Each structure stands twice: as C-alpha cells, then as structure tokens.
Length: 315
View 1 (cartoon, rainbow, N blue to C red):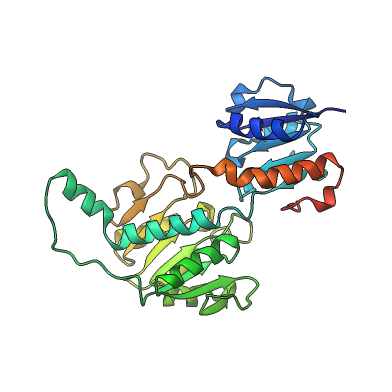
View 2: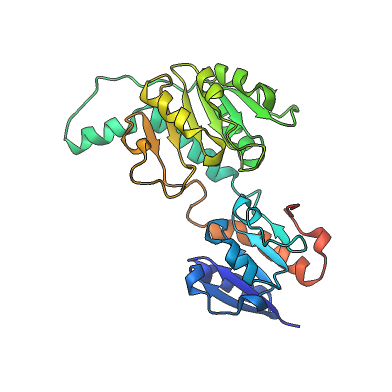
C-alpha cells in the first residue's frame, strides 16, 4: 500500500528530493501554503509541516492522518487543534536547534548591550559616535530558563564568554557548564540575580505567562530580557511597561504573543528593544539538519516500528 505524504512548506522541494531519493514506496505531494494544497487531505497519511501553517480545519479534513512530523521543535500549534486525533503520531525536530538558538541568544544579548540600534542610526547619519562605552558580558550573570537541548547549548556558549550561568528547570539536576540550577518555582529569585534573563521555554499550559509581572519586577534595572522561547510565556503588557519606564535596561525579542508582530505594537517604538522576526530557527541549510531525523523516522514508520520513532510527543 502506497503511503501518501504531504509536505506543507514553502521550501517543500528540498524535503521532497531527499525523501524521494531514500524511499520509492511513498507518494509525495507539495504545497507552499494551505491554500496551495491540491491533494485530497482525507487521503494523506503523513504530514510534514511547521505548526504555524496548521489550523484545526486542516486537521479535521485530514481524516486518515497517521503521522505528523513537525519541522520545528515546538508542536504547540498542532496540540491546540481539537481535531488532532490521539492515534496520530506527532513528532518534533527537537535536538537540531542548539547551534541556532545559542547564536540567536548571543546575537540579541550583544545587540542590546552594545546598542546596535544606536550604531545603525549613527551609520545612516554618517556620524562617528565614540561617546558610549559598551559593557562586557564577561563577569555578568546569565539566567537561562528552560534547560533542554537549546538551553544547554546557550549555557555552554555563555560560559565560554566568561559569564556566570544559572539554569532554571522543573527538573533541577547538575549540568556541566552551569554554575547553579534553580527550580522553576524560584524563577523570581533567579530573575533577581540576572544581568540577562533568557527565555528558552516552549509554549504549554504550565508555561503560559510564567514570565509574569512579578518576575519582571524582580529584575535589576540594569538587566535585559532575551526571548528565544515562545511569546505566550510572557506578560507582554508588564514587559512593555518595564521597558518604557526603564525599570529594566532592554530586551532582545525573537518571538511574541502574536506573530507577525502587529504594526501598532509598542515594541516597535521602544528604543531599548531589539526585534528579530522569529528568525531563531530560520537559518541557511535548515533542511540538511532536519533531514537525517525525518529519514530515520520515515524508515521506522514505514516498517511499522512506531515505538522506535524519535521525538514522539504524547498528546
């Protein structure tokens, strides 16, 4: 029996070529967006997609879906769909984002600390402005909230910068390269220690709004908030208020509660905010990083070895 695969992604060709080279018994269909889908969704067995392209109507129409392979680590968009059936296997791309997340976090930290926006404006004005000294990361304290693959990778890099690195986790344990690990119920205490408070948390009911007004209020006036996790984890109104009133020094934000960020969002006009349009995992060669995992899981799926598939999400 032929397995029908739908790749819902604007760069679907790259995934299709790699899968076709490995597997002859699958019928591959491609669509850049949901509006471009031409195959009968009710006949699709396997879906490869980023969650941002998914809605519950699509899930409802895909009545025979046996496996969803999320091309991202986050699967919250899929889990929010009421028509996601329990018998449908859901896997994530967890494990490939360590390098991209640590580089994104470091870039945002450096952009905020060195006043990248000021330097860009000075360049546009052809103005040589050497009036402001920039602060070292070395010797500062970074608090990394969310100690998975990406959080550990971020901690390792920041330790190499000479920083004191504290992790915050629901499962505290000794982790090489971290100076201390705090439990999540002590997040406000950890935030008070931070020169850089770094969010790497996924979206979940447990994490929703965890960076609350109280946590943000606990931060030092000289501290910066870095978000490479999910926007839903942050009380954005409290964050905007703290930034506007300079109760914290700045923020580097790759994610927001609503994506894309709305044109009237106050974040755009705050001079102490660096905005990145959810580019943390949007790097050159992404397909090459995720394909080995997809190919291994496809081989196991076609062999009926579902229990051996990697990164299976319980839902």
